[in-house]
Image (cartoon, rainbow, N blue to C red; front, top):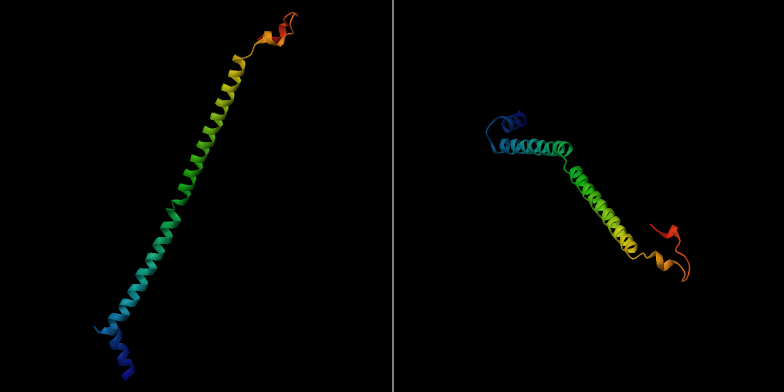
Length: 103
């Protein structure tokens, strides 16, 4: 009888053991609910994919910019070559100018 009355007092009444048991179970309940909440939040509201997509968009923009810059540099190089093109320098001295060398 004494053992059962001890456990009854521990569970029912306002005692130190009751407070300790209540604190342990409340801590487990709170921590497990916190872990579940973090899992749900990470599963539903994960921002890692958004940041990775943003980095990919930034990389694509950089690639487009460097590609356009390369085209601009190549076209300016060709236009500089065209401005220096002299068709009369291609004929031999004393010969007629060939019409296929004209623009």
